[in-house]
Length: 476
View 1 (tube, rainbow, N blue to C red):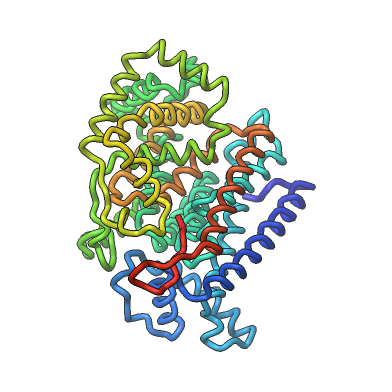
View 2: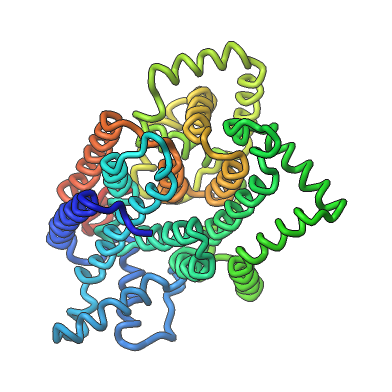
């Protein structure tokens, strides 16, 4: 699982150094402007300080996630504090706690690099330089990068989820499941990505079971719906006839995924015991069928992956698709209209908190006109068509598993929250074809510009509410 070798290893280390210096500089700037806990940090830091004091029995009911971040923080800061001779207040200071996410941020860069090498290393057009630049771009993904400088769960949750995926791709499933457990301790919904990893393994085994090369099936055909239907047919035949090949498939799947299955059983037991997936206050986390979350995800993907989502070739190809499949487009539009009409949710927090960008997006775009939710649907359709085009080299079982995981991780959420899109977006970009440097530079400029604006607004454009003197700041 090493990163590319030779001079490119040195280049990767140099990039790590630059990213570390940039992150450290911004961390100190955040500490200067906002030295006290802000928003959700008030709950997270308040809880971890209790842990620092040795109080593991008192829990803030407003916290809805497991204590993974707090336990990792203690595991890092307590030994460092002992070596440095820090007192308890210094060891668990706001600055040091926020610095934990710098560690995860640099770790994520390495994971991006290792995943790109594993996924695309055998591609004919693979270049280490492109891999390093792609890893940098993904490390700066604005929705994730901003929370590097606050004590939030996102960088750590992403790190352990990606580490689990990388280990699974190297068939180290037992350790991958252990990392999946840690990811769940950061955020319960990461159990969906544990299921994704198990599903990807199943899909790979099914493709091997079908054996396209033995049946004269073209390589590009394994991404089609026809291949999915044919695979399901062969699976039913194997199940019915109890063929030796099917028994080997089942044995291989169970031997590879028993550790994930054990994790699912344990998590299911927790849900039964706890009475739900959320710990603490559940009032703001009621599961719904918010299908438009998929629309919002497509917009976020289009904006941040713009150079890969909209090209002249793709535009002409999409127009050709409209002429060839007008009925399909019309059906997609009608179904999307129904979903937007009956399944759009406006969370109470959405228009009650003007510190988040979603407040302004909802107010100035979605509430601009009663029909705006329908006017935007053709754009959503294009976005998903472009997403499909970028993933056309993945086999159909991978795409199906990804689609199910995307659905489960977004649709049940009532609140429009961009952080729900971090892992699905990163997996999309990791599995998109490697691009040329010019497109990557354009993508990098977009990421840097958005990061610069969001960080500038947070640090330098504070404001107050009419009924409070507390300083408020803009953020994702």
